[in-house]
Image 1 (tube, one colour):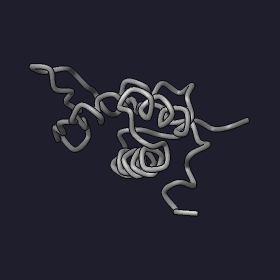
Image 2: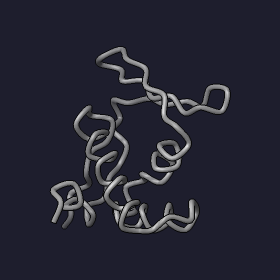
Image 3: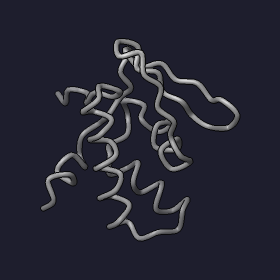
Image 4: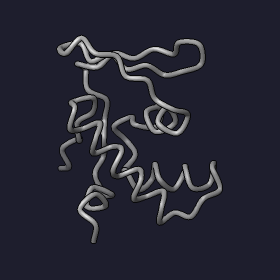
Length: 98
């Protein structure tokens, strides 16, 4: 199994240290501690919208596969990679599973 896909069953949630806003149709993340702005494309924006502390990464990928009409296998791998990147920079965390 791809190491990125290992997070498929985890539940991401937005970090309180990252603010966000829609500017001229683009979602922009502000990493407060780093004073850094990051713009997300429309797929990144859709993922961010679904990172709510309730859905697993796999559930987010399922929605994207349907909405963008692409095979779940590639969407899952790409979603896991992107969410891992957001976790690496501290924009999201993973909810503890009881």
